Structure formats: structure tokens, C-alpha cells
Length: 113
Image (cartoon, rainbow, N blue to C red; front, side, top):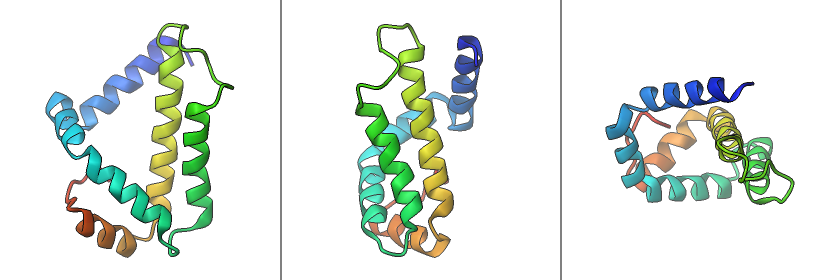
């Protein structure tokens, strides 16, 4: 995928998230999303395969086997893209009742998750 196509996809994601104000809300709620992630990873009702995908994406982000950051744009976008794909897969695998329970516990009511 070309660099321009990746940038376009990132801009589209920004638009779907609600633009700059959506990103601001996401940044404000970031600690809640971290708590949500921790709670879901510890919950036995969440499939192990979903947990493995999320943890593998985190390991990829910090591993030395990666596209170097000195390559403009691509070095960061691959980590972001893989993290977003893993998060999306993880959230789709979590049973809705379990997700609702944990969202309520951390104080999230946002449609982003």
C-alpha cells in the first residue's frame, strides 16, 4: 500500500472519530480505555485468541523487528495500523454483555468502542 493511501486511510479514520474534537475526547478518555483494556484482558469470558492478537500487536509495536522510525511516515503508521486492526478484532470478539459491563465499570459510554 502506498504512503499516500495510508495517509488517506488515517485521515478517514480521523473523520470517523469525530475530527479534532473526537481526538480530544479520545485523549481525555485514554486512561479509561487503558483500564477497559486491562479489565477485558483479565476477564475469563473474553476469548483467549482475542487476547493473544491484542498482546501480539503490542509486542510488535515494541519489537526491534519493525519498520524503522527513520523512514518518514511509514515507520509510525505501520504500528498504528496494526494496533487499530488488533483493537478492532479484539473488540469484535468480546461478548457484548461483557463489554457493556466493563464499560460501565470504567465510566465509558462512548460509541468509539
